[in-house]
Structure formats: C-alpha cells, structure tokens
Length: 294
Ligand code: GLY
Image 1 (cartoon, rainbow, N blue to C red):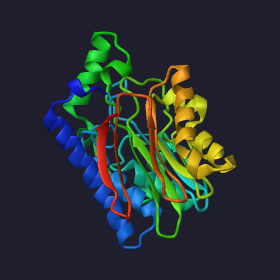
Image 2 (cartoon, rainbow, N blue to C red; image 1 turned 120 degrees about the vertical axis):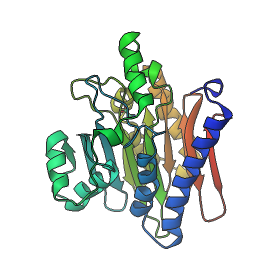
Image 3 (cartoon, rainbow, N blue to C red; image 1 turned 135 degrees about the horizontal axis):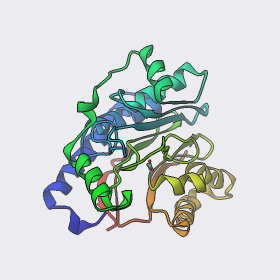
Image 4 (tube, rainbow, N blue to C red; image 1 turned 45 degrees about the vertical axis):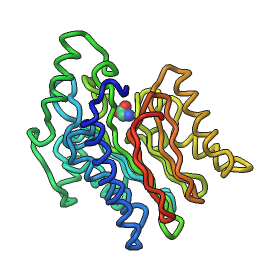
C-alpha cells in the first residue's frame, strides 16, 4: 500500500468508509450493546462496500468465483464461529456468528456451511452481487502477466474489528475474500481461530490482515494474546509484543498487520507495510481513521 498509488479522492473515500464502520460499532457500544454486536455492526457495512476485499468486492479465485472466509470470537467465553469458502452469504461475519451461537461446531466449510446457512435466516446474494470489475481485472492481470496475488492485491482489504465493551468483554471478527487467484480450496488466516482472529478477556482481542499463509504459520492472533497473558506488565508491553510478533511474520517473508484491544482498553495497531486501513474510537473522545504509516 503506497501513498503514490492512491489519489486524494480514493483516500477520502476509504477514510469515509472506515469512519462509517467505526461509527456503526461505536453506536452499539453507546447504547450499552455487547462487544460481539459492535464487531458485527462495524464489519457488515465493510462487507457491503466494494472497496474492501470482503463480501461484495471480494477478490476472485483462479476459477473466477468469489469465495469468502470469516470468523468471530467472544473473549468472555472463548466461544468462536468460522466459515470458509462460502459463495452466497451476503455477510459472512453473520454466518460465523450463527455457527458460534449454534455451538455444535466452530468451523464450517463450503457447501456444508451454505447448507447450515439455509437454517440461519441470513441474507443471501448471487454471484453478480459479489463480483466487481476491479477485482475481475486483478484476476485477469494476474493470469495474463503471471503475477502473484501480492502484485495485484496491493491493498489487501481484508476487514476486521476488535472491541472492548462497557462490561469489559472483548470480541474479535475478521472477514475476507482471501487472495486473488487462490486455488485448490485455499484457506487464509482470517477464519482460522488463533491465526487471523482471536479474543480472550484475559489478554486481548486481535484481527489480522495480510498474507494469510504467514499469519497461519506464526499463529499470530493467539501468539499475541498468549504473550500478553503471560507478560508481567501487559499494559506497558502490549505494543512491543504486537510489534515483535509482526516482526516474526516479516522474518518469514510475510506482510500485513493487526489491530488489537486489551482489557484496559488500549487500542493498538502493528503492521509491517507502508499502510493499513485502520481506525479507533473510545468513550474518552478518541476518534481517528488512517491509511498510511505517518
Ligand atoms: N488475510 C487474508 C487471507 O490471506 O486470506
């Protein structure tokens, strides 16, 4: 993600979209809602926004479909729900929620997840809803020029939210279309509990974006939470712990970033790229959105 590759108008559009998501989550908390509900409220508008690689606007697989992954985790109970490879669910984060609420399983895939969704009363959509010309171009370029997904997905665009509510409960959610040109049922880090998504009231809630393979190998989200839980001074060390884990990702060759929130309400970013779409707000008046490192 480079400043010179985005026009001022594009930057303003992304900032407005981030602010809307932040406002939607904050409104839930203002009304006394739960961290889980705030995560869902922040993520669903981004799943409807074709600028982001989640829901509508998801990248294309090698075969030309949009296959989405999502996960949601409750830090109070460590209940979690996740789905991968779904094609007809307008808001995959809500299907992850339905899996979690149902409670029999944590992680559903493909046709089975779609079948489960039939009983969950969620909004469905056809291929035309998810497909966008920009993502189609990216797939065509990747194939024609034999590029990697990282060349055409220079703004990854996975979406996520982490929240601490007024009861002190934490929650994390992540939703994505994955990587352009993904094949063979490839699953990224976003729906893998502990890799791209994790929440535990004892330590933190984390959501990740970036090259999923590396985040899976490092177990980024749970690794950050575990280091924080075992730290003698988690408040002072939270930023360093997140940066250290992201440095491990970089050491293996992976790019991306994380957002996290702690039980004391620290809101932390760490990314090893030139930018990451992000925003944070709290009841003390903090309210910011940002794209680039500076
Ligand atoms: N981080 C999203 C993915 O790799 O699928």
